[in-house]
Amino acid sequence: MNDLNFNAVTPDLESRIRPEDHGDLRLWLRLLTCCNLLESDIRSRLRTEYETTLPRFDLMAQLQRVPEGMKMSELSRHMMVTNGNITGITDQLEKEGLVQRTKVATDRRSSIIKLTSKGKRTFAKMASSHEQWIRHAMAGMPEKSKRNLFEALGELKLITHTQLTTHS
Amino acid sequence: MNDLNFNAVTPDLESRIRPEDHGDLRLWLRLLTCCNLLESDIRSRLRTEYETTLPRFDLMAQLQRVPEGMKMSELSRHMMVTNGNITGITDQLEKEGLVQRTKVATDRRSSIIKLTSKGKRTFAKMASSHEQWIRHAMAGMPEKSKRNLFEALGELKLITHTQLTTHS
DNA sequence: TATTGTTATACTCTATAACTATA
DNA sequence: TATAGTTATAGAGTATAACAATA
Image (cartoon, rainbow over all chains, first blue to last red; front, side, top):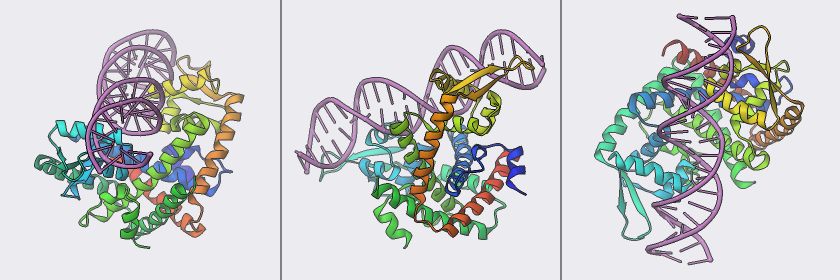
């Protein structure tokens, strides 16, 4: 199965590649295509099955693994968006009773955000579905390929992280 | 280089992973992190250096490689967004004189969108910068790793494409 | 002075749906 | 009836910047 045939029947972002394009660019477009494909699937399932969004899910996922809670600024760093946006998403989740702000004694500017017990229950369900969606999407890919991909992405992540934060 | 140390100093989306999480999920989060990292860099450069956006750039990129132009519905399929959105982006680009709608004789419902010569010049500049940004971001990753990654992503793309389109 | 978090603003993208004009 | 494209709408996410309270 070659890419030409594949692209002929299933056009996607990667089809914008030109013959003269450099390998790095091809790599990037392929990465983008894979990611968009999965991401739009996840987004639409989160919306239709749980009436939520990826950023909201991400915020809850961050909290889920830190039972003691996180500060807004920590969330902001982890999710790589600005403070104001975290405030907005947190407001929505708090209104739905899924997270809770608590004032911290040592620094009266800050507050700690935690999942409520309702939030934990809700997240557990979503996370379980989420995992199934991913497994379904990736079903059929050999384990060895997955491991290779995981390793290779690890390299890329490290490289881009340093390239994009140190310079520029 | 281990992930723990890495994540300790550079928090990101992947840090939401839990020890019990399945490999597929880890793979997905790592993929998402890599993609977001690069994507947000590209988006912000497109904005600051060219006052444009990724979807606009993508649309022009699609047109660039098809000199005879494309129909709206083709663009819609390739960019994986609905018709109405293509209309909007095309309107903007047309207002700036970068693309041009032409009525097609054989089917009076359709129109063909092409890059204008200004559009071609503009795109050429952007594409060249874009390629440099990508190469810079990926500089330092061994060629062999890149090739492995490219191949592995090809597998993933194929799998997910079929998984996500055939079954729901 | 710097940081934490909020608020306000403006913009883009997106999906959805109703609509037209053609086929 | 189905398709191509437009229009209108509503919602989300984002960056930016100004601001108050606190460190």
